[in-house]
Length: 364
Image (cartoon, rainbow, N blue to C red):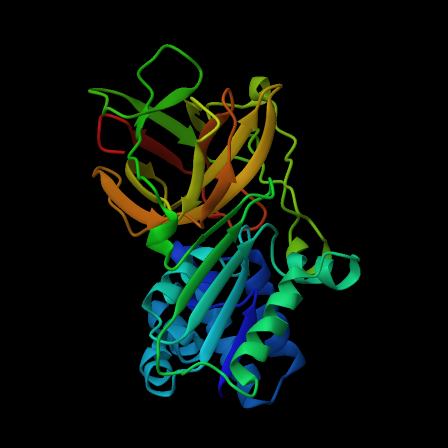
């Protein structure tokens, strides 16, 4: 294999199946359906075994199924054979999060290029197929094959690297590496110490503070993504029906940052660290990032779940994880909002009631 163009693909199959200890409604159903339809075949038996392993939280058996299907375990082969690899990924893909593709690209030792564009699973490709004048995704793939399979291709054993990020506002950012895209990094602390319904994202750690949220479906925070929507709907901009006045702060913790100028943007993979106490057999926290424009117009940037299991309710738990990417431009007066709640129909919620205390005294 001399050249590859991968669109809306996975690089670590464990993440969509059971990433951050969280079951996905789509994949759970797909494994169950495949095991029924293919009854009697070895692959159906494996799907059934994996479906049961997910229900029983059997990480070892889940890895048995996902690891052999994950390109991240083939780096030695890529390094030896040097195929030219183009990765084209939609930045809000929940089925196959861009986070894994980003890290995979960083570790590839081949001629490589990564293009990131707005959309969820498959939407940029579908849109480009049927919308006249919008065929960039496919044009880039054709150009890649012509470059590497043409009569005078570059040397495969001379590593090269290109990254291109296309944001919703039509701005384009290019660099040789992912690190080259990032001009600066910041750390923001969750601060719930002010006497307001919503907390803040601050550059200095607060001395005190916490916010308790309990399980439930009425937080007022919604992603705007339809269940199994990535396969059925063409969605480019996610405008969930959220009103600040309707947010239930018993079920959602909100932290805001007022954007100072038009040069503020997010490009990359944010990391989150939360110090929490949880009560209940299991507890699910869903971290959303939103851009909120003037007039209380909310736009989803990213959504990432994390399920706590086998914890001691009397002890503080520290959880650290990557968000599923953050790629967005802002204007002065917009707000960057982190919203943490406990429910979204994309994920399987614990059957038990639970509550989560988020400690905001300088550690989260």
